[in-house]
Image (cartoon, rainbow, N blue to C red; front, side):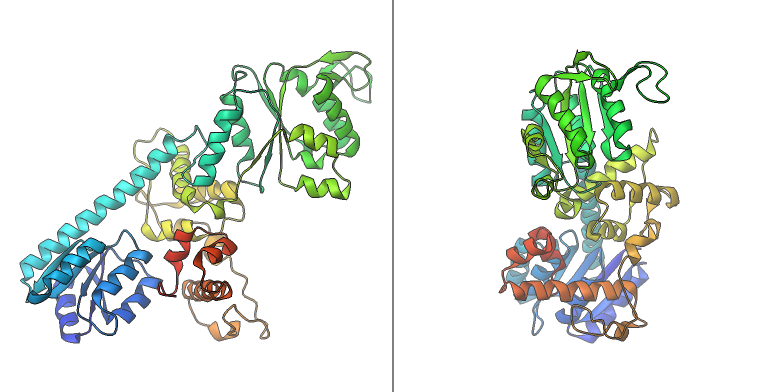
Amino acid sequence: MVRILLVDDEPSILSVLSSLLKKQGFDTQPALGAEKALACLRDESFDLMITDIRMQPINGLELLKKSKAMHPSMAVIMITAYGSVESAVEAMKVGAFDYVTKPFKVDELMITVQRALEYRRALSENQELKAQLQARYGFENVVAESPAMRKICNMIERVAPTDQTVLIGGESGVGKEVIAKAIHAHSARTQKNFVPINCAALPEPLLESELFGHVKGSFTGASSDKEGLFETAAGGTIFLDEIGSMSLNLQGKLLRVLQEKEIRRVGGTKQISVDARVLAASNENLEEMMVAGTFREDLYYRLSVIPLVIPPLRERPEDILPLVFHFIRLVSGNRAVMPEIAAEAQMALESYRWPGNVRELENAVRHACTFADDGKIQLDDLPARMLTNVDVKPATSERSPSGDLIGNHQGQSLKGFLREMEKSFITHSILQHGGDKEAAAKSLKVSLATLYRKLPDPEL
């Protein structure tokens, strides 16, 4: 149902507007004054806001500016006295859809409301289509709407045609193998094998055998000669994932392969020439491991000829919705109609921190598509951990960022609790940085646009 926020400092006007719109089947939320309207906008989303211009202490124009910062896609209609049309025109320059003058005619108001809602619907569909197109026509499977990922794509385009070794860094789940596959796909080796191996998944003896192969009788169970993955990747690419888990002994052998372009099978004496491009990845800090003596310095510099670091998903919120549509399309397969996403579900997807990064997002989309009814993903279709993943302990000594005892929030909805904690934490960060919102956004690891959208008070 369409939700409309009504704002005026005269109760009688609110009553009339609410009654008229409810008769037309709209869900209305009256707010007596701009301050109450802002409180509603911080906790809820609306399709349309109808507000008077002349209000105190915050007028309609100021409310419009603040509401647009919080909900850019919400349509806004201004109500003004006949003599204040100039103010209404100014409001349209700021972002209002249209205005009606007092005393307004019911038919005129309803036509304006319908036009505003149609505009908002078209805008929303256009944004979703744009996100889908960005996902579809991005750098193959690398969805890159954020500046950080666009930079990664530019680097892939420059690095892929070369035979340089690339070291890909980033947290678990950011998509390091996807980047490696993109490099291989855009290289001259694309017609040959792409051979991935997780170095953390195998014990040292087995990993050595997998990488370099073995000869018959070299160990118990070696009943025949076996080709290693470096040989399998001849002319193509070998991807060494979780390279930091490799033992120092095996690191030395890998270094020799990189230097000499030759391998020797386990138990063998013959040197075998190999031509495989090496891409490596790690979610550990290899420089710190070098200092600790658990990773060879000479190997590190051999691997990191071209370093690529993939930022976590929480630092690139612009990629979230394009990734969501990308995964919905993968899940939907050849179905002509893909599920839509309700506004509340979109907000939840964009505001969640994604500790598991892109891998967690893909699993969340698969979960949501499984439980979605009537071709639309609702908030309740998302994994429960997204809505309940907050550490609330009953101990009376533990305090929230605002200083209030957690126990004082008993009986409050989870959504309200999370919003209150978020507001308090953002305010605290901004004050800590002397009002510098850019510095606060950097410390919170969100974009400046995200910070403004979540501000408890845009004037802070």
